[in-house]
Length: 338
Image (cartoon, rainbow, N blue to C red):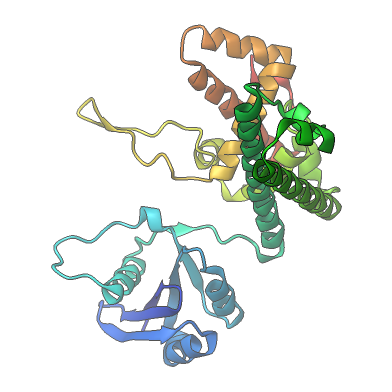
């Protein structure tokens, strides 16, 4: 008899539910986050399980990987797309797990992509680089704030990089301010070394990838943006058509219409925020350094908001990027922006 299991995963424990084909509950149990204990709870149903659903939480991969190695058919749940049950006066972790198992039983469980384990470390390392870059920007802005309060002048990013100790001693008379600025600059310099180390590591790991070489033919896409797009897109074949990909990149408008009336903007956060950032950044560079794209952008910006025109450029670049990742070749600006 087919059985369906689900795991409501938390930071230190997991709630398990197993249903049969009729929807009857066969297991209802809370266990610590220990793969052996979870496996022992599921073992009596192993041969009949059609799938084990795991919520796509921040800590889901250890459980997904462990169950997969043990031979269980795993499904990662797209939590944002799960239909909420209504009419219950009480809801808890056990009802959540049972709800997921029931959706699987009915063939209604929305699933998410399980990122390939061999590339997961590279993707996460690239995301950590972005975090370090954001922290370094905050440090730079903090120094700029000190400088503006002390001199009334704006300190450019380029001038910041060339500040000398003598300039700091002359500008900041208060010893506490001098110490604070020197500490911020030392922290910024340390982060730059770590960012450079990450970039060298990533370059050594992926420099010969043909899909990255094809993507680098797009105006505005350099090493970091190209690597971000390649690693965040993962297996491009998982997208059936270009529209699915651009939607995943958050470059398709989200709206709801009922009886000809707009009812809202829908779920604008559904998709990959790193890809959204990468394609918008690529568009910003492209409209500055690629004349045909700049002309196309200016024509659109003349009759609609600039942010909308920029997003339209990003959409076209992402559409071209989809075909380059899937088929290879070189970017044709005339074909993309005709």
